[in-house]
Image (cartoon, rainbow, N blue to C red; front, side):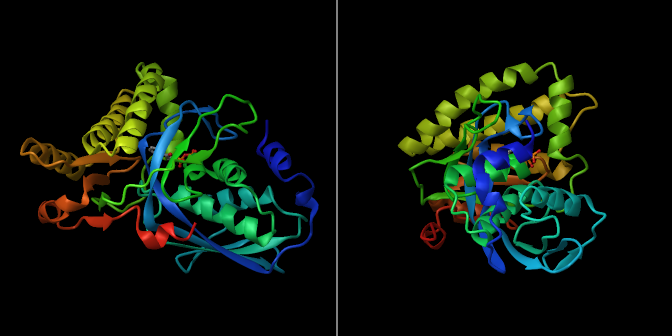
Length: 339
Ligand code: 2P0
């Protein structure tokens, strides 16, 4: 099945509707997975092999403004800088927008502003595509459900399925070929004391995209078949931890899930490593602090940076050890009141 078939399933006649506003702006938070998405069962539709579960990062994310323009092609800016039409980023966005043009001649000015680094393993494609879909929904007056918004965002990037709403979101893998049962569902719980610390060790673009790395892991790692089993167990524990506010269970499970994902990647060939010496050194500091009784854990995505997990009352102690860490409170009231 093609992406355009899914778009037709969701939008039907609305795709022909020529009514649109001149411009629309939408914000979507970025998210970090506590239980990761690593591997696809369908790479056209970004359908995952396993479910995953994330937390959004408060007001960290992307704001996309879309304007309909009388021009020959799409123009894109990222943080006020023009993106060349020959770049992979521009091509990926344009190909995605092709799915929604009511006429071939319809072109856009797309301005994306993000307060996270692009491609440094902070899920920039997640909030980028989610904010783009939210802006399209406004522009074309579709008024889609959260489910349909999540499915459309997934067609842009898998993890974007978890960035339509703030909070804890479970992206269920689904079993249907058309992926209409594979979308992000908001969990009812909030956890105001839960903190995420962003520990940036390097802001450069990653050498291997998650997309490519996932596929190589599936194709070459002897251990990949164990991954779905690990995820199944971890999801049970993470949902229990969130429900019971059991931070030790949450931290332990999230850290172990991330380490397993990276371990499996190391066993791919050619091996994939997102570690830098600074990543390992920070991990060792975290483990040492934990031995001293501090409830501090980490997770790591497809980049060298770590996201620390801890509770608000430990912030001062942790900040002393990681002075460059940026604090994010995922359940900031001002973010939550927006939905
Ligand atoms: C995640 N990551 O669950 C995992 C953990 C990175 C490590 O989802 O190919 O950019 O666009 O579906 O969503 C990053 O992969 O990949 C990702 P595509 P995506 O957050």
